[in-house]
Image (cartoon, rainbow, N blue to C red):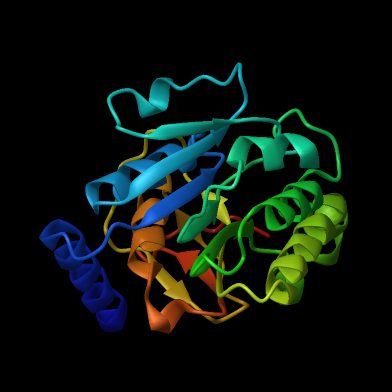
Length: 235
C-alpha cells in the first residue's frame, strides 16, 4: 500500500497547488457508494460531475459542489445527450442495478463507453463484485448458481471495459458492511482472486482515491478486503 499512499499524497498536493484541474464523471454518484466517492474526489480538488436520473435522491450529496448530468444510464441516446461533448479525465462507475432489470451492468458499460471521449479518459474505475470473472471459485457451487446471472453480467461489463482501450482499474467487493458503518482505514487492495472479506463503503471510497492516477493500479483487477473484520460468512 505504500505506493498507493505515495500516489495519493502527490495527487492531493498537485490539486491544491493549482497544477492540475482534473474532471471526473461518477456513475451512481447519488448512491451509498458513489456519494462517498464524490466527497473524496471533491476534497482532492477534482471537478466532479454526477450522472443522475431526473428523480434521483441527491440528499447524500448535500453541500458538495458537484455538477449533474441528467439522464438514464440504460438508454444510449440519453447518456450521450447528458454528457453532451463534455470530456472527463476520470470515470468512476459505482452504479447499482437496484430495481432495474437485467442486463443493467452490460447496458451501463456499453452506453457509457459509447458516449465518453475515450481519448480524454485517463482512467476508468469500475466497482464490481467478487464472484465475477476469475473469482467465481470463491463461492460454493450452490451459492454461485444463485448469483450466476448477475455475476455473468458483471463479468461481461468488466470485459467490455478491458477491451475499450481505456486505462482501467476494477475494484471488486465481497461483503459490504451496513450503510453508516464508519471507515476503519485498514482496507486493502489485493490482486489475489481468491481473497474474500468485508469492507465499508467509506473505505471503498478511500481506496478509489488512492488508485486515481496511480500507475500501480492501472489495467489491474483488485479485491477489496479489510483484515480488521474477522468473520465467517460461510460462502
